Length: 321
Length: 276
Image (cartoon, rainbow over all chains, first blue to last red; front, top):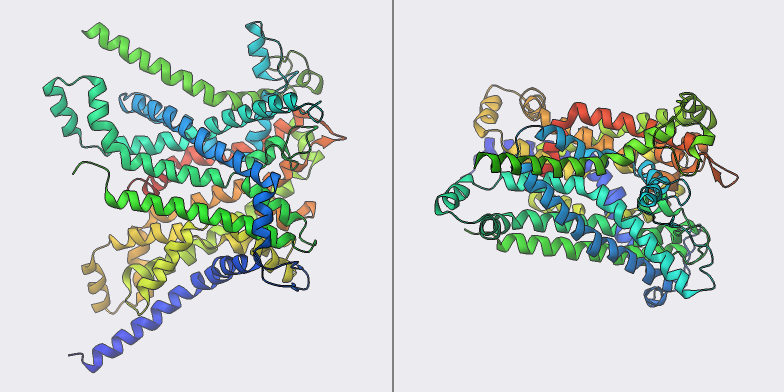
């Protein structure tokens, strides 16, 4: 039975609780919840005018158009390249580095700090440095390659690509390589830290038993480290691929707002977020905001599917019990 | 046996040091170029270190673009974002962790769901909200959308839940109000998580590019990333020496801040992940 006093007490709890939540939920409503709903609705508005808010009808035409848009396809290919090539590659190297770090004691903290630096470096600054390193004439990379007798390579150049498909593909491959090197450098740090934390969470008793049994190093990794590390691995993969799907600043820093090497007009290096922001840049043009919204909705769906996958896999539990 | 062990160890260190060198090279190249003269920065092949150190590049970079203004803007925005978002997050995290009220589960689920939605999706509507309010080129536009962070609410809630119930009951019996309990008991105990959340916000603001680029068109309202992006390209030829000096100035404060507060930042990152 609830006494009168108790009830009154509960009521006052309720009131204070809501007062604590008001600031957070006001901001959440204006800057998160409303935008989600509004973006979904806007993506269906045909000829939506930004200034007046007028539109002709609700239609899925922009979704159709976007799927056929070659620039959007390119954005999907480039984004997938980051998520499915760069991310796994940097994960493998991060795991190797973390395994090495885990078996040393001296200078460990210093090394961790140094590995982490790219993560706290301004993206634009880092992008510019890479641009300079990959410069054809006075870049560091070509200088080093020159020591081995390799001719200077025009890493980021679009000269002559308009007329020749072969030159275009060559230029594209080189730009992807620059992007790959940059994402390896940038992404390694965070993954090393997370892998290391995962490795340190593994109960050392497993290793002691394996040592008593005389299990080989390779088998210790295959039978103990890898399975017990799998929740960490999945977590890192999902969060990194979500970050990859949001890639934008690094591409702008290296390939400018035109999303390509100088001389390229096809937006060779555009990403999904790049596509959204580029559409939004023309916001005064009827329909532009809707097109941006369409791409944003697709991006949100991809990120949500990835997150749901992660939650699903982690809940089922992939580790030994 | 012992020799073999030493050999293995040195191989390990050799590998780790090679990786460190690869990680450090861009930083080295940035700083080295920032001290070169204009002519030297364009020399082919490049010099591997500045033959003549030109410290004046830093001064020239500061004069060429209003970098002090960018720094001021970024610090102002960061200060407000850190202040507001920390207050907002602590208050709501406390309510979710400690208080009972109808709809608690549903509201918390809502906060968690928004963690899944990419910020980049919100940009479109937030831009039109800000534009309609006539807030383009204002600090408000740069500050407010960054003040809500579901991840920090989640992180702080987990931490507050670890504080024992007895403490709360004792405090209430002693007649301490919820707010006083939050200030006197909870805050001192979650101090390190609060500091972590503040630092993560600061790094975020320092490096953010897309949103400020969208809502500021005037040069005197830009943040460091946007300023750096737009400066130093004069008649399509780039002054690499000045650009690298500016890049160094943008990068160093954050690196110094990180080195001093490493413990907090790394613990926050790890807690957000593996155990979450």
